[in-house]
Picture 1 (cartoon, rainbow, N blue to C red):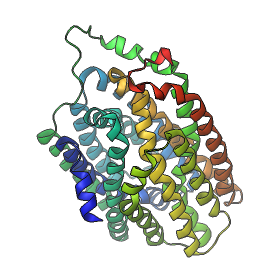
Picture 2: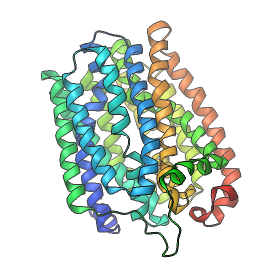
Picture 3: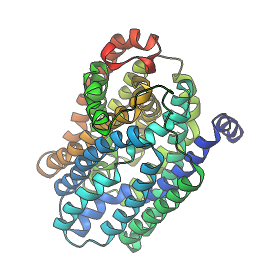
Picture 4: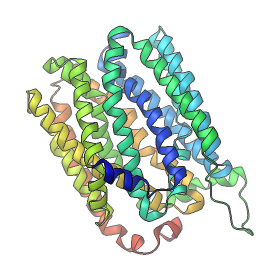
Length: 414
């Protein structure tokens, strides 16, 4: 297995391999912190999941605005500088969050950190698409998921131990890993923004901003984003609501939740390569529908089961869905985009994560604090069923577009 992974890894360009290594370091820090964020907020400020969900929603809303700004900057000025800026500010934001003592101040900080922390997101997504040819992108995003999940094996375990002593250590460690990653990008990764044709007319900054209208007119892409939002409203419950639900309803401690996340990560590390190789031979929208079916079954199970062994079974089903939809979804976003508009398409792709982030944890918190908590998971199943139908409809609608070189198709022609 290890030899096959190494052989496959060497098939990718050196710049991409460096980026993967840097991403791994940054993800280790993030995975030590993020799974315990809702626990940190509810314990430190003595509030319920509703307040924690509102705080996560503020992060997502601010990040959405930051991503839109970042998409313009990435297409106009390039990727590398923006990625470095985002990492440095992420480090500063982590330190600030670790020492804030007022929930009101935390809300204000969430606006600033969410905006500037996500401004580099489209640049990072566009950088990967710049480095890899279209036929390698799905597997390339799969490689990033593997190293990200290697970090999930390490991070939550270390984070759980650090949290026993001080949550502040989690924020400080995350800041250090972000700074190390920024240094690697600065030293080893050059700018990847495609060079315009010799006689191509350059865009002004205003024209680049106005270019978002072309993205919004791409109706198939917009339908893809809306359907992805439905799916991700459900998926994001795993990283926000699930830890509090297991603790409050079933008495599962933080280390038990951390073990579930590590199991998820370990399965991705072992199986992501063969899954990515297998699904790339099938229509991507059908694969999105198939992966969402696994989500539907796995998340709904949490509303019906009450033993830890079945919690593990549910996570395994969800992980299979992850291994299908995550790399395929990112590759689809790049496939929709004309080369000169990758940053802005990736910024819009951020909608599919940010909008669910604004509402998913908050809505789940309202249900958990006021109604039967199991309804969170019943509704997850219903929403996933709608998303499955949406992806199948998109499969029927995009066959002609993807049969022709999709990355070269202008949005208006779609």
